[in-house]
Amino acid sequence: MSFLVRWLIIVLSHLPFGVLYALSDILYYPLYYVIRYRRRIVRHNLTTCFPDKSESEIRDIEHKFYHFFVDMMLETCKLASLTPTELRQRVRFTNPELITDSLAEGQSVATYLGHYCNWEWMSSIGLWLHDGDVCGQVYHRLRSDAMDTLMRQLRERCGSTCVEMRQTARFVASMQSQHRPCLLALIADHSPKRRDIRHYTRFLHHNTPVLIGPEKLIKHFGYKPLFATSRRVGRGYYEVEFSLLHPDPTSLPDYQLSDLYFERLEEEINAQPEYYLWTHNRFKYAQEENISRPAEKSMTQ
Image (cartoon, rainbow, N blue to C red; front, side, top):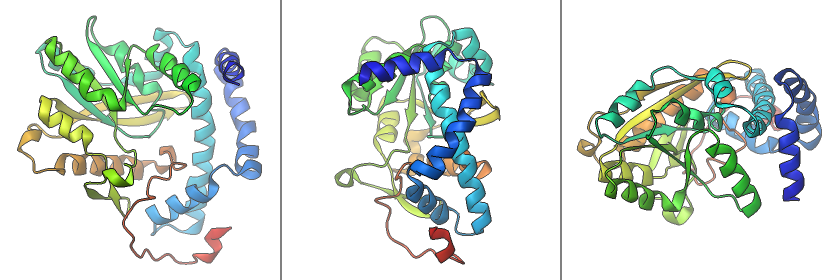
């Protein structure tokens, strides 16, 4: 099975973008109307995250999301053949000097991202760094060893080093012992396991449990915390801008840096909600609350 998946990804990766997006337009219909991939989760997420939106607005976001979701899956396949030059043309980081200048001064940087726009292509930030700079991309290991290896290979073609989530502290400690400043890319909107919940934050009308590991790491090792704001400027084209989350995270009370991250992520999602990963059961451990919606029955179809 892993061989077939690898073969399919390689074949898809060599299709021209025009053909790839034509295929995406076709695949959208069986995925949405026949397979109905995670539609119940997507609908529940959208209705509870945007209680003030009408039924037609929710459906509009839902349709746009599934169109983008297929695009993103096929774009991820393109990582198998895209050249560094092509990636730099399609994912433009508007102010990479915010990172490269810090690294040149010996200051390590941690940039927060979310499952927003094509986060797989965002790993190409490594192509914008100077020779010798280290970019560690923290990722959640897949259950399938074959698929995990394949995804690491695709991501590392972009100039980053994949760091399994449980090995993050070891990686950072290794960089520090070598006196090598590095960039650490953190997709920090995963839902923690129930036994690991230590803090809830207000996120998209939910009291949501958050991973506190990134904040603890940033404070302990003295990393500069940035937020990466992503925009889809065209089909297959993205822009990313970095901004400082806080100038002195060690001065903040516990969990406030995590709260700042989710505030920025919520602003990003509200701007164009169709580009967030709504198929994730992100709010499964959220604290219960009553969210009223008009015409709730009609939304269950």
